[in-house]
Length: 371
Image (tube, rainbow, N blue to C red; front, side, top):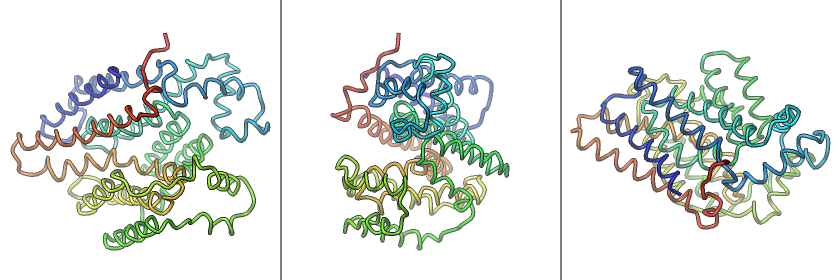
């Protein structure tokens, strides 16, 4: 497990430098910019050149050649994979690209898109990377490459929407959806940018969600009566009848922490964060959406997890924004700010440690390079 801890240490030391500088992240000079690119390089090497590490690597390796030689109309292929990712795999096979090179290329695209997105919105990029490393990276970009790549493309579509480049937004979002259907949730981007939900209303909706979770209300049983026969109805039926997917999550420390983060973020004036009202609305509403998905679909683990994932990881941006407002912008001593940072780092490390030391997954994450 030592390579994982070394990667965490690199991010920790970089973020410590960021905090000691005392101001929010900017590319201040060529040396700092070099540090940013070097960190991205480490992530790419660590992810792209790994061997059979993680729960999904061997499965993708075995199916890569099958997806490459069969048509998408083949029943086996179409139920296993979204058309966009099948097409990428098919092209890789036509180019006679070995699977490790294919994996490396996917890792490059996935990581570069994420780093671009984080740099755009986060006031402290390395603080964001601490949270990223502890969740989204290990679960998706390091292992579950389809959803990781899909989320990365969806994040780029958000940047295009923000810049009022609607055509590019649509193109990148459609690409994201074609690679993993969970990115359908990002069709809500225009709505989330515009609506301003009052804090009290948001708290009431969350409370209702907690009640639904406590009573184990099954929304999908009700929804199935209105869904037409087809792919979505079939998938939901599969999830509901398979004990692997249909387990109830219940209340856990993760959702409690996310609700607390949401409340802290709701009490910040966006003008104090040097971001526009639209961006603030998107971050707050997207994060709220992820919380509600978890609460209302709590009795179907795979839906609660995957449907909320892309928006849940907006915490990578939101937590550093809260840290800036509640700690760095206050008239605290440097020692107190560093102490607050150590608590932040401790929280990130606990998430990270739990992720790579989950008992039934630990053997999958024993790291080794491909060569």
